[in-house]
Length: 377
Image (cartoon, rainbow, N blue to C red; front, side, top):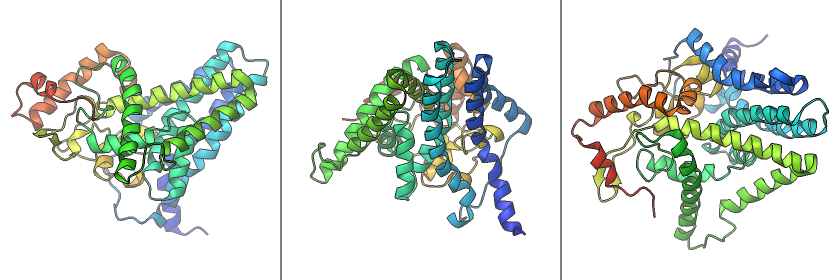
C-alpha cells in the first residue's frame, strides 16, 4: 500500500514527465519516415499551444520551504533525461546511417526533430541542473550541453546573464525593436566571447592565467570533442553531419527562448556603470499550464532570476501587477519571434506599456538606450 503523501507527490510531479513521451515518438518517426517526421515539431510547437488553451493557467504556488527529500520525483526527472537523450541521439545516428528506408531528406527531417528535443528539453534541463549545488547534477548538465556543442552556455548564463540581465552588458537580453534574425547571429558570437572573458576574469582574481586547467572551457572542449568523436565512430562523416544538425537546431531553440524572455526590458541605469537590482518586472512570464509542464516552469522566469537556485517545482508565479505577462506560452511566442513584423505588432505595445508603468520618468528611451556600452570589457 502506497502512503497517501507519497502518492500525492507522485501525482503532482507526473505532468512534468510529459516530455519523456517525445523519446518514443521520435523513434516511431524514425521507423516510419515520411510525414511522420514532422510529428515532433508539431507536438512541441502546436500541440502544446492547443493544450495551453485547453488546460488554462496555473496561478498556484508551492511552499518554497519544501525540502529536497519531498521533491524526489521532480529531481529524478531532469537526471533521468540525460542517459535517455544520450541513447536517443547516438542510437538514432546509428539507425539513420545504417537504415535503407530513409532518404537523405528524411534523415535531415528526423534530426531536425531530434534537435527540437535536445534544445527544447535537453538544454532546458541542463539549465535546471547547472543551477544546483550538487556536483553530480552540474556534471549532468555539462553532458547535456556537450551533446549540443553549447557548453559555454553554463558560464555565460551563471556569470554573465544573471549578473547583467536587462542591461546592455548582457548579450542575451534582446533589445527593443531588435528582430530575432539580427539578435541570433549577434548572440552566438557575443555569448561565447562574454563567457570566455568572464571565466578568464574569475581565474585572474585567483592569480591564474586563462590557460590554467581550472578554466572550465578545457572541460567544455574535451566533452564536446568526445561527442563529435562518438558521432564519427558510430556513423562516419554522415553521423557527424547529423549530430551537427541536431546541435544547430537545439541552439536555435535555446536562443529563441532567450529572445522571448527579456525582450525590450531594461534595468534602470543609476550612473557610473551601475544598474538597479533585478526585479520581477525584468522578465516576461507565462502561467500557461501545459507549456510549463513541458518546460518545467521555465516560464516562471521572474522568480528564477529572484532565486536562481530554487528548484523548478518551487518557482513562484508572479501576478500581472508585479511582472509582465506574455499573451501566450513559449511554444506560440517563439514561433511569433521568427516573424519580426508579427512579433513587433504583438510585443512592442506591451513593452511601451511596461515602460510607462515602471519608468514613467524616462521619456526619451531612444536617447536613454544609446548612452550605454553594449559589451563588458
